[in-house]
Length: 269
Image (cartoon, rainbow, N blue to C red; front, side, top):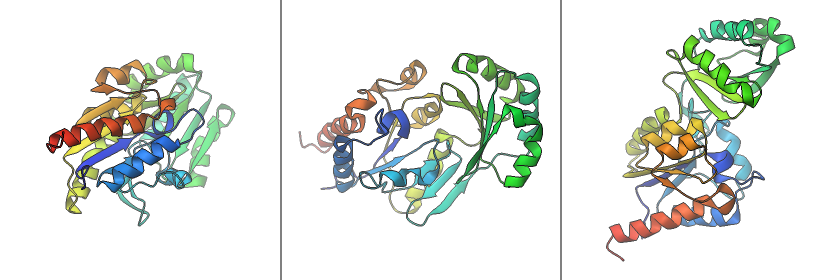
């Protein structure tokens, strides 16, 4: 009866749709398939590469577009095309040189494109320009890595240095991601919704689910924002609802919530 038509679930991957073992549980998989069979759309918005979700194809196949590389790419998993692409500008090189000069706590810089990445350890910082040139581009983000207890200090430095030019997100306790100011999980959500409307598949309710700092922008754009129980406090603070821990089949619980609401909305119960 298409009870979920017009609903879009957009979930983070690590720590959200997957458990501690990096698996999508059968409980989550069954619930997702049911939601999709009733007309709902389920996909992911992740710091991972757009095609990372392919590794779960035996459990879950998104039935709409995927947001990848922390909101710098909107990807069609059917055609394998990028519908939106937001690489970072060349000015980031100046920022990277400042980090190498001023931040002794940083032990690695990772450069990411939409389909590949490479790591530059501190001992190779002097060769950064040559290494980047040899690998080509464009680059979609750079990840600054230090020990977890130094992340806040480095993040403060970056906010003062370039917070007005770039988005700065933490995806985990030791990494800070630098990407273009017009990118991000939340920033790309309007592009996804516009594309779905153009496809003749308009969304009336966007449900976003996350656990870490880089999920906050999409939660603030959602009609219904869920944090999993294991989410950091900053994510819980912006969420409308807090569901169970990601090890307890969080997507299945969310879909059960939405089914009750959809039935009430349709006057069935």
